[in-house]
Amino acid sequence: MASDYPEDDDKMPEEGNFGKGARGALQVAGGAVPVVGGILSAIAGAWSEREQEKVNQFFDHWVRMLEEEIREKEATIIEIMARLDLQDEKIVKRVESREFQSLVKKTFRDWAGAESEEKRVLIRNLLSNAAASDISSDDVIRMFIDWISLYSELHFKVIGAIYNSNGISRGAVWRKIGKGDVREDSADADLYKLLIRDLSMGSVIRQHRETDYYGNFVKKANIKSSSGGSSKMLTSAFDEEELYVLTDLGKNFVHYAMNELAPRIEYAYKPESES
Image (cartoon, rainbow, N blue to C red):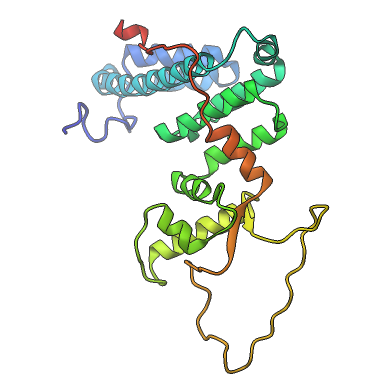
């Protein structure tokens, strides 16, 4: 589909000038931030009127992106509130608290991380459950917000495949997320090893280990293999022997971000511009 703008419309003109509209926008921005006001005012007066059409297109494109981001945030807030029992005084008190407002602010400051609908839903679920549940502290929830920004959709598919498995091998996870056979020296295998390493280093998943009555991990017994029976092959990216489980942090992340509260009221979001 052809774009409404030339290919380089998202670039500022290298020479020439902002038109009146662009100059005015920069001067307003400069007035809002006194420290940079002089710089922006100088920029606004550096170009002539002949570049006005191109600059107007640039600003139009920029404003459209900002409007889309605002609509996404508005829809997310509405969907969160539709899922909360606002007759419950405990939930109302939580939503109005400075601590919860701080979580909301952090989420929307980091909104650039919500580059897909899947991540937007994770954010919505996280804030909904953070308002209605106190299983994890706000410090942990802040880290979950960072995880949503840091990890990809494929990371979250791996987390979902390991959840409630009571131990599952890397090979079984690969098949469970719908992937086919690939070579050990392929880019897909390297990517999968990176995903497992990311989640392991991030304390989201760990290898399954036995625990004693008090929850202490029990060391594995050393098993000596005969010299003739050792394999010359390195451990496969899709190993079938070592089992993986979610850490307690990983389980709580699933509870908060991958568990959806059912809407208590039905509401079809419609931006004001479309009404």
